[in-house]
Length: 177
Image 1 (tube, rainbow, N blue to C red):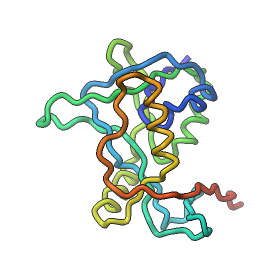
Image 2 (tube, rainbow, N blue to C red):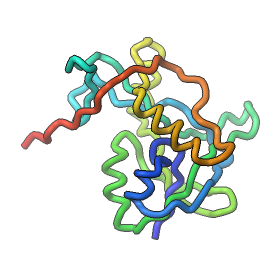
Image 3 (tube, helix red, strand yellow):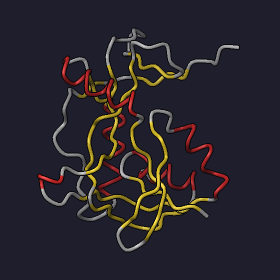
Image 4 (spheres, one colour):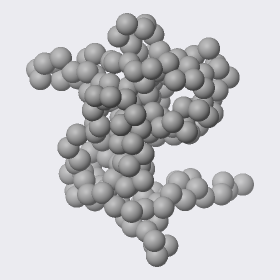
C-alpha cells in the first residue's frame, strides 16, 4: 500500500473514493501551498480549457501546488489529507497529475508518503502568467477544493487568489497517432 499526501483537488471525497481510503488529516511542516502550477492554454496539449461559447482563451489555468517554505517567513505548514491506495494505483495517479511530479515527503506524525509538486516548466509558466496578467483560476476547481476542505473542521481553504476566477470547461483532446 502507498500513502499520498493530498492538499488540493485530490482531497475531494469522490477522488479519494476512486483512489483508495481516507486516512485522515495530515500536515507537512516546512512547506507552503501556492498557485504555481498551470496548464498553458496557448500550448497544444492533451487538455485544454474552453469558455461556454467553445472558444479557447489564451490563458494559463492555475492549480495548487506545494513548495518548500520560505525560511525567512517562519515555519510554514500545509494541511491536507493522507490517502491510502494500492501501489499499482500510483501510475494512473501519475498520469492524472501530468503537470506534477511525485516526490517523497515526511508527513508530521506519520512518516514518509508520496505527494505531487509542480514540474519546473509548469511552475515557470504559472509564474509568467501571473506576472503578465493572463493567469486564471477555474471556478469548478476552486469550488471542488473549498468544498473538500470544508469537510474537515478547521482545515484552511486556499488563501489569497493570484488571478481572477472564471468559468471554463475542461476538454480532453484525443491523442494523435
